[in-house]
Amino acid sequence: MKMGDKLINIDLFEKLTPDIKKYFLSLGLNNETSEDLSQDVFIKMAESYADKKESKKNLRSLMYEVARNVRNDHFRRLYRIPKLQSLEEVEYYLADNVEVESTVLKNLESSELKDKIDLLPPLKQKILELKYNFDFSYQEIAEIMNLELGTVKSQLFRAKEELKTLISND
Image 1 (cartoon, one colour):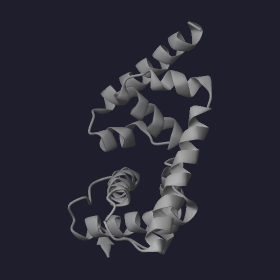
Image 2 (image 1 turned 60 degrees about the vertical axis):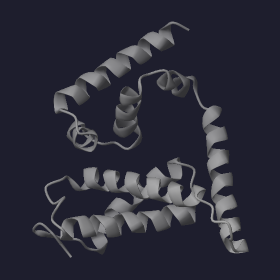
Image 3 (image 1 turned 90 degrees about the vertical axis):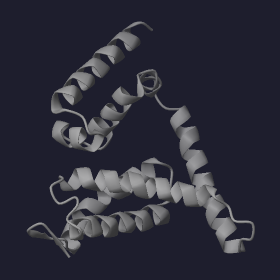
């Protein structure tokens, strides 16, 4: 499959997969599910470029957008429980929920910084997450969030200033 003038290949998949997998693991999904969803992201990325509807976007930005959509689809499927289920489906559902629950509990016990970040407006939280958890550039964050580059820079600066104030007030 082609993406613009570039060819989507296994090397590209192997280069981007750790970031995608890290994203899914950070949501509390187990290793196997994270790998499966990472493969889904790659397939959807290839389809997007094959359709040429996304060919002008930065690959990392596209990857994150596709991963977010795959995550949403996964959780919709996960929490939509059919009336009749096989034992394997129930075990899969419970295993993922236990992973999510344990990660949430770990995060609740996390540092004071995390608590302070939670006090920030959602936009600033998201920009901080993309910058420091996923190491996106300002330009990539702007593309992912459909914001101007200047807006991303100023919001990140303000978020850091607000964090300094929140921490120093304790």
